[in-house]
Image (tube, rainbow, N blue to C red; front, side, top):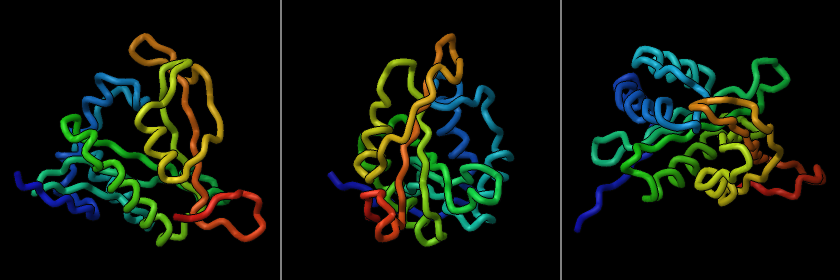
Length: 184
């Protein structure tokens, strides 16, 4: 059986419809995102532009012409002192999970963040209160992210209280900064 090659590339406006379709079930059926209204395709085009105009990566996993997932780095906070820190987001089409696409996207995203001069990447992972983060925490841990904290019962969606787990990765630790982490 032949396998299709996965190409990780920068997202374009032409990808917005596929991105919207991938994200929609996460909004409507899960607590993985705190959004409660599915963003329109036009909104995704605006988000792509916003990320790329900031010099940050917005990537898609292209599997034989099909957008099978996407990842991007957005500003962690808007105040200027946070300009070297970003939050990552990774979403896969439900039928494309467990095939290594998340790993490929996160690897390319971290490379793009390093090239953009990012110092800290923050993952904010929503979990049902008192539960673990599952695949997302495992993926981030595999790339050197460490847990930086948890906000308990910070959101409510689909009748459930949701925690957020914060994970952090220092992309360019300086000698003697005490982080104990190294860039990969």
